[in-house]
Image (cartoon, rainbow, N blue to C red; front, side, top):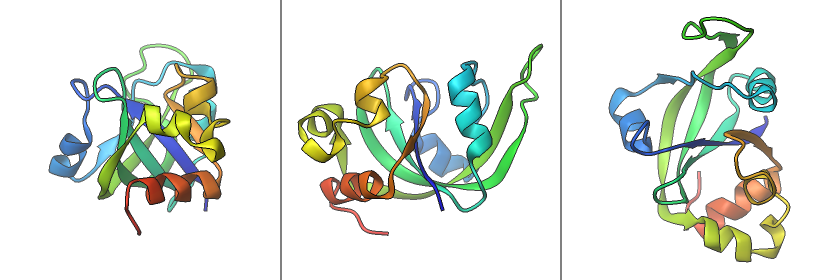
Length: 137
């Protein structure tokens, strides 16, 4: 199993909306590195859901239920999507500030490459963020 972090502006697509809909196609990614990470996702992989721009915090956990396939919203180019379902909210959201202040997390993509919307995490990083959020799976 692999671990990921995905980002969305809550006004565009929030974790609450994912919970309400029950499943989503993660579309509209137009960055080659993020697209390649999407293509690396496998069914059963887990992702932390991060609210960007407003909130700046990890708020939930989701699971890949369909591996990469062509993005139907792409008018041109070779883009991909995956499908996610919500698993659970973190008991306590984990802020970007907290992540930056945690020595074990200072090398994750969220800190180093802030603009990337999809990024891999090590299992230890994933678990550390869950611990900071007082959450267990």
